[in-house]
Image 1 (cartoon, rainbow, N blue to C red):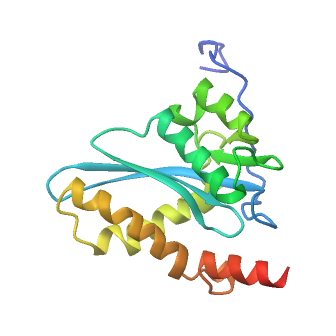
Image 2 (image 1 turned 90 degrees about the vertical axis):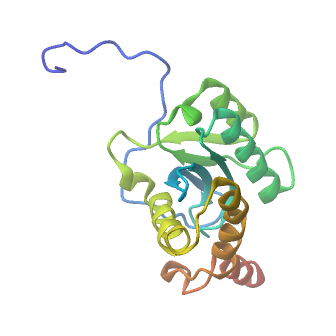
Length: 197
């Protein structure tokens, strides 16, 4: 269709896309945060959807949101961005620009979200279409969360699961070893690198 000029003109905005160049891991913390979402079903049929922000160097889940039987909204993403900036910098603005890499979901690409991100000192970046490897660190976290937590824990209903997700994230941050972090958890790695700096 493109070759025959049969596609409609794209509406919206000029989206800064980051071409996949094979570089997923960053050389230090707070250069790029990755974000993605996941969903799974409870035993009673409730659907849980969650989104998270993960540092592309130390792999800590900085902020997250989860909802039951609804979608992650732009407001949820903006709250997550604000929480991450406050946690990492103790301020409402990053001291230097931090890239936030996500897919092209409407909660991330919404004009309000992009403006809010800029006000926090963040730069919104979006993966090229059909290129999940461009956000490989987030994809790996989704796989880990589903394999090591969702699939082995009781999931009777949304209320129970929403109360458990925070514990799962804390366990991941404090105890889950990564080969790329010399078999340390994200927080063990952060502690070791700040002590040697």
